Image (cartoon, rainbow, N blue to C red; front, side, top):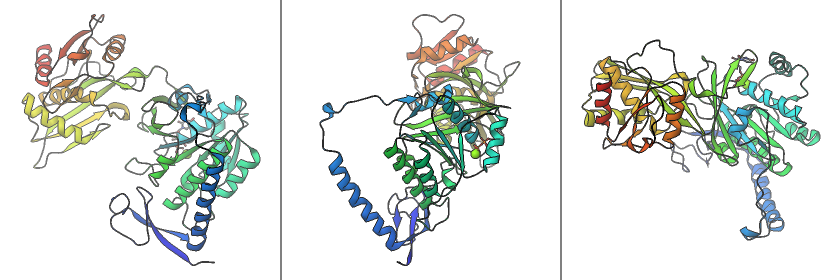
Length: 462
Ligand code: TYD
Ligand code: MG
């Protein structure tokens, strides 16, 4: 047997190097190479065998075909019965599809998947729940708590990949959950479970198994402190769908967002509420990210954001306070670089200076907002806090702000305005191009082309 050989694997891209280097030779990231051990001879040999084998396999099985001659079937989806989950999956579970679902510990990944497996099992699909983090008894306890007393979901408490694959082969489930991929290890590698090499190798094997057998595989992934999925970046490339759980563990609302989906739209979100009996879908989530102020308070501005197919109202809060020598800019749920840019635009184009102030911005409820249409609401909440003057009651705003101080339209403005009107909002500042042709009942709409205009209108309203 060949001597064990150490290689260094990049935690960002999964690239390898025979020596430790400060910078990854594949992706250029710094300090990302970690030592992983492979059985040199064996791994090399099996790799060669595998690639030679798969090449010849491909050549025989897949002759080239003109695109037009390939039957383009839409993939069949099996709805899980949990509507909000199906929404992010693009309709349901796809045969042979691999889904990676990431999120903070305790946010509800295991809960949601157990509920989904039970629902699928009840529709007649054989399911297998592989748990590596909890014992079978713990999973059973959770299922009782969820009120799934007579659940027929098969549970396997196992962390060794080869045994999991063997069980998949012998029991032939239609859907398998691996909770979590970081706990699974393969015998063929000597490095510890959760190491880059193990996670990548195990995920690759499971993906291959899914594609060759048609079993749908759902991988649960841990996230790091920074909120990225732990393990190699390649994991996200390998799978068909990547879902992220978001939300503040202290509030009961949870969002599941599709980051990548080969079978559906991205940035679609599913909204859940964590209850005593597990996660319940929230079908009308538009008002859950508003905090309840009896009277308007300074530093708060409601934004109508469009997540996937549904408009939602989210309260943006800002606190501007005089600071020491080094003013801080902090944002929760919003991009920090964008905040710095918006402060510069405010200064330059609206004459609002925050250079000697700390600026904190927060999107209420732990929701993450990535669309630039939030810009106007962020700026208005900052100026409102700085002046200590609340925006009018029933006020909303949206619109992207450019470096030249122009306010750019947001996609599907009409829908946003209608949703706001439906929820009883009465005044809006929107980009000119989003102004509706026909008035919307109950909503007074101010269309603006520039930031300074928006600031003047707000002053007039107050
Ligand atoms: P869990 O699904 O174990 O999280 P993850 O797998 O993402 O780590 O979620 C557990 C949390 O949810 C825990 O803090 C308890 C809470 N919870 C409820 O509030 N209600 C329930 O019915 C269940 C099962 C869990
Ligand atoms: Mg869990």
